[in-house]
Amino acid sequence: MTMVREAQLRISYLILFTSCLTIASPVHAFTITEPDTGTMLIAGSTVIARVDLGKDTGIVKVRYYWYGEQDEVLVEQEDSTATGSIVAPVAMVSSGEQEYPFGGPLKAPQNGVGPMRLLAVAEVSHGRFGTRSVFDEVIVNVEPSAVLTTIDFATDKPLQLGRAGQSSAFGHVDSLGKIFELPVVADFADGITRRISTPASGTSYTSSNDKVIKVVRDGLLQIVGNGKTTITVSNRGKYASLDMAVNVNDEPNEPPIADAGTNKVIKAGSRVKLSGLKSRDPEGEALYYSWSQVRGSKISLLDANNSEASFLAPTVSEPRTYRFKLRVTDKKGADSLPAFVDVTVEP
Image (cartoon, rainbow, N blue to C red; front, side, top):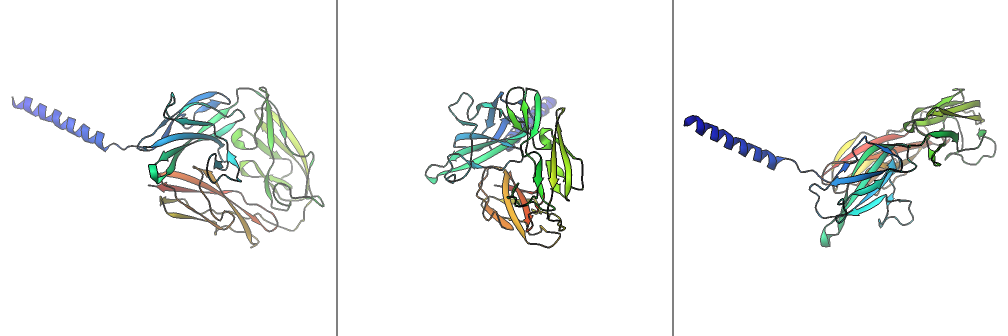
């Protein structure tokens, strides 16, 4: 009889313990559940987007946006701040009345290739207190089903850098130390031309003369001397070459170095300062600054062309990461490689 009683007590304790675990289980915030991070999608194919609202109640609708992995976050459509700004095209808008509540059939970018970010921004209603937004994003890989037929440089051929009387090319007048990107496009058998300028899209670069043009990271090139070189790109077994001639002022100039500071964790509602004060130029020249946002839902970034930019941390239901990019330029027009900083906002 005693053994039976002990068994009943153990069962009761187990039920109570399980109940406590259930009550203590964390309730997550708004989350994209499909597609999952790392999913391979065929360009132009349809995937069912699904979200878990978690503890975010009062969601009215969800807007979905596609971005390249390092593309700048553009102003959202229907955002009151969008006047006069570039507006991000909405891939889908969904409400709770849809077949897949706040989700549904979503087309992978037809012209996409390589890593792509899917950003979902949910509008939360607070009645007479107005609305706010919460977001989640995942990175997937987009691959065309069609074969690549040809690749080419979308620029003048041959390309002359630093010729007399030139206009500002690739953002600044050409000079030693300048870092720039060459636009490369690919024609595929499905009739679509896709931009493939980054290694993430499968493109690799070589220079026949590293003393004239040097290949640096992320598919970027740097002017290091005068003379001629041939830049060759390859992707999926296809090749293209571009002859280049460089004739710039031979005054020595090293590119500046951007420093966006260390990653930080802050509370919602706080004023966040992004500091590029540790950026430097080897020759000690003054620098020009350019901050941009490359992850998270769009926020209002103040003083984006100063050494220190700032923003007001938005309200979040769960920690969310915002990523920012900094480029600096010296007086001779040489650009730095980009530097990145992550700001995690907590409730």
